[in-house]
Image 1 (cartoon, protein in one colour):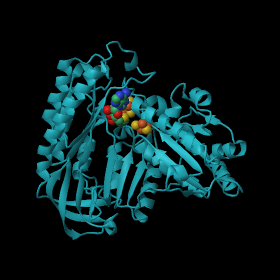
Image 2 (cartoon, rainbow, N blue to C red):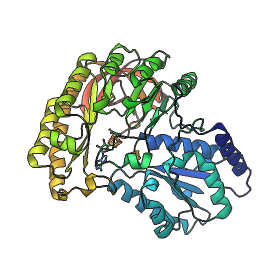
Image 3 (cartoon, helix red, strand yellow):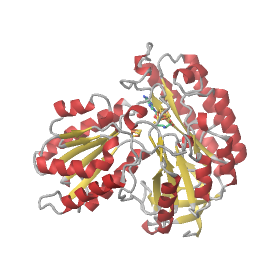
Image 4 (tube, rainbow, N blue to C red):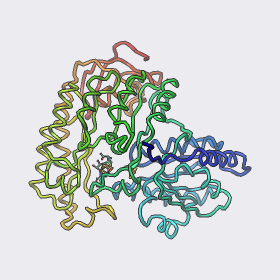
Length: 469
Ligand code: SAH
Ligand code: SF4
Ligand code: F3S
């Protein structure tokens, strides 16, 4: 059966490439750029693609946003504070521009795709020169040219759910690469705005993914992180292959290390667990957002699993991949959450013993179902709950991380440690940050270490031999 495809046509991609060349040859185009990125890995990778296009337009990165000719804010709107932070920083830059009138201010990303935001930008943020949503990323060259020619206020919010293939990418790290396998989300968890701002779920063709992976391996990439809002629903629809099948193929390609994120517990299949258990290159790490430990709340969140089913998945994962690193996302203060229901989340955390947890206070997002629910929880109640949860997680984490003491690990070094220039940090297979003695020379290498201690929820280690795989 012929599969429906949302891939942007090659003719359209060529048209955009022509705009890139036209901008490069403009006498008055901006020379330098700076991208400010908020939000998740999806946005981080989109920024790499936007940087790729800007470089092809002949522009170079500026060291600081205040010094750039073109500043692009790639925004997030998952919670109210993410949005407020972006809007605050955009407004601040307007002041800076008073002494640098050539500066162009652009805003893109999820926030622009929010209902009503385009109008808001046109009215309250008229000083923004260009705004475009997540569905228009491949049209950035065309919109940029329009902005440069008009000098005005271009705001574009496309609604079509597309898959742009073949965009240039300027990766932040050479040895580590994000690789998007699917876009959008169809789950409509009742609190979440992502399905509204990232559109319907659509998977890339397996051939396109495998080709990109092959090119990355040839270019020396040591670790690939597969990206999607719900990677294990990859390939749904007629003629598609499952996420587990895709992983199996990638595992056989000689990519040294493979991670993926994020997985939805309702779609975590036995097939996927089996592939992980048999794999040579898929790292023993799993991010499995639980959100709540209470069945009534899970149902109100539209998560489609129960506490029992979640615990069963965790048990299977641990059995199939011994020592696996487990992390999660948790929301407290969902509308109507009682103290007893919150305590169910606490007991689940005690039961699972995660290696790390991202904890959030529920934030109502306009247009979502939960925002209209009665019984919104007062801020002081949610604040107290999150503090209690964080304290529990930190105490447990000190204990769970002890299982790594004395173990050997291979760490892909990300950079110098934030606390010292004679130490480096990176992640081992389990995905936990690990710090040990080293220099800038180690960045991008895989170093064998022995774990010696636990410090502030991360691991410390000493070097063994060096393996520059
Ligand atoms: N697609 C991923 C997560 C995307 S958002 C997944 O389903 O796991 C990352 C996390 O933000 C979510 O897991 C959730 O814990 C949190 N989150 C999303 N919407 C939120 C809201 N309205 N208020 C508070 N936290 C939210
Ligand atoms: Fe949001 Fe749920 Fe989709 Fe994750 S699965 S992006 S939480 S709607
Ligand atoms: Fe934020 Fe958009 Fe990611 S809302 S969390 S940047 S998908």
